[in-house]
Amino acid sequence: MGADPVSPKYIARSPAIAARKLGEEMVIMSAADSTLFTLNEVATVIWQAADGSTPLSEIVENKVCGEFEVEPEVAYRDAEGLVKELAGHGILLVSDQPIAGTAPQRQENP
Amino acid sequence: MSLMQQLNEKAQRLGIPLSAHLDITYRCNERCEHCYLEHDDKGEMTTAEIRGVLDQLADAGVFFLIISGGEPLLRRDCFDILAYGRSLLFNVKLKTNAVLIREAEARRLKALGVEQVQISVYSYRPEVHDGITKLPGSLRRTLSAVRFLKSQGLKVTLANVLMRQNMFDAAGTQALAAELGVSYTLDPTITPMMDGHTGILSMRAPREMLREVFRDPNYVGNVEEFCAPPPSADDEVLEGTPCSAGHTAIYITPYADVYPCVQFPLPSGNLRRQKFIDIWRDSPELNEVRSIRAHDLPTCSSCTHLSNCTRCPGLAFMEGNMRGPSTADCEKAFVRTGIPTANMVAKARTGGSAGRRPAVSGLVQIRA
Image 1 (cartoon, rainbow over the protein chains, first blue to last red):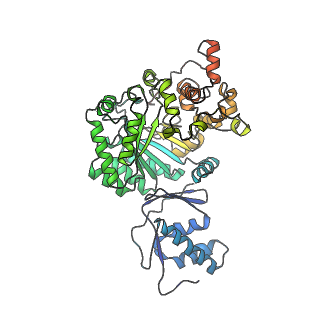
Image 2: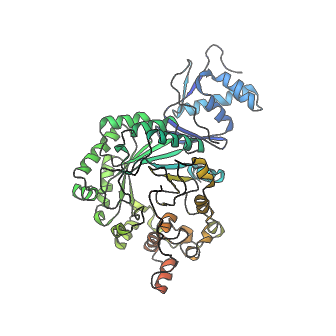
């Protein structure tokens, strides 16, 4: 998968955000600087799975590759890019250890 | 097109209420002369009822949540409501007079992740501000709160309403906002009371003052552009809808009544008897509001100003016809450009009654 099995990467939604699903996209606003983001369908799947306890490699394998037709290496590379960007804006937390205290999951709409 | 505009367009296309304004009380510790509310408690929603409403709003797709009043902090459960809203991942904006905010409250708002606090300030001079709020010491306490909120790193906006009582203080109040390092808005809109009474409209700033504001780049940006004659209306304008009220935005009273907007008191349902999603999707009133296009407006569709008019359908409704003109917006269009509106011309011809029906008696704030 391209992930380093020795040091898994854990990701968690920051509690300092507002988020809601609008159609297939996720709308997110950072409480820190009011920057508004929209995530596409694939990025939304990763975002929703960012529970702080599931390694990124597992999210990509089970959620992304399980639902979308994409090569695992490509999916993992893209996921790492997304994680880096969202972490840079402070709306996603990244650690090599499981993370406690993530934002809740209530983001869906009918 | 900005990301925000794209979101609004998408929400309208999908029929999703992107924003909701929830007044959790009409009670207030100030008695502002221009206020449109009756402050007695007529049976506010309980904490549990409000939590239920917030659950329903989140399920319906609401992202932006305004918590306001009255003075929302008069409710002992205000912070519980804010915390519950944040747990549902709303983007929360609090509208308050801030009189009850000290350091501890400011710290708590920051910890909750409230995105913005909008505070009513009517003048930089205590005698003017306190004269409007009828609460001695209110400016001092409000500004103290602004400093507490700023020290916590919260985004603060001073919201001023231009009226006769403070019309010479707008610039000084803007300078005060700059000194405090916070944003500033100036709104010349005085609305009728929610029960339909119009006495407070006499407080609207006179035309000369509005003209001065509309020629000030601090408020309008590019004056030449802002005051230019309007472009002619094309098909897109004629097929357009007036604003987000009832389309992507909704208003809920402390008594669970649902209106298209706080400025559009058209009773459209009640959350004590109906589910929000059923009101949002099936209310005949909301569907009527949504059905109106610019070409349906009997007077305004032929007006020179149609393409960039700020006509508020709620103010028009309070004048007696949601498809009619809003006199206050006609005034703004005229003051901006010097060109009379179709409504003004028709009134001049008929002696003042054109395009209007008698005010309806059903403009009630409370429904049993």
